[in-house]
Length: 99
Image (tube, rainbow, N blue to C red; front, side, top):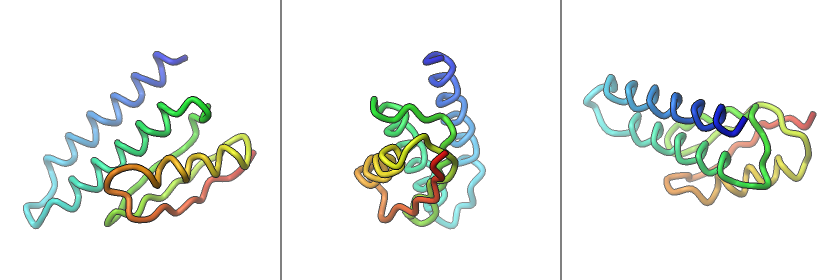
C-alpha cells in the first residue's frame, strides 16, 4: 500500500512538472503553484498522523485548496496545519469532509 501511495505521488509530480513546461511565458505563477501543490501533497503524504488517500490539493496564487474526505475532524485539522507550514502557501482553504 505504501508503495502504491509513493508511485501515485511520483506520477502526479511527473505530470505536474510536464504541465509546467506547457505554461505560458507570461510568468512563473503556474510553475510556482504546481510546485506548491506538490510540496503540500508530499507533506500530507509524509505526515504519520494522516492516513488519508482521498485528499485533492490545488493551488492558485499561493492559496491552497484541500478537498476530498478524511476519517476524523483531527485529520481535517491536521491537514490544514501541515499545508499551512509548506513553503509558498499563503492561505489554506479546507473543504475536506469527515466520513
